[in-house]
Length: 54
Image (tube, rainbow, N blue to C red; front, side, top):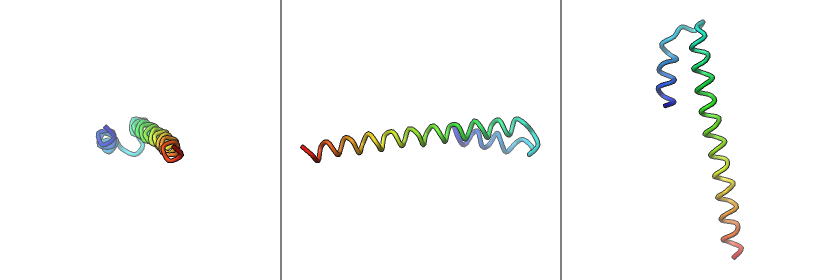
């Protein structure tokens, strides 16, 4: 999905508002993925911390 957004963005000129909107959509997706990845890392640390203590 991210690649398709970037391909669509490249079709528009630099001054076009649609290009800016697509860029913001792409950045929101990337930000959401990074937050989710951080959540799973924290969960994994908690899980392995409990397993090592037992």
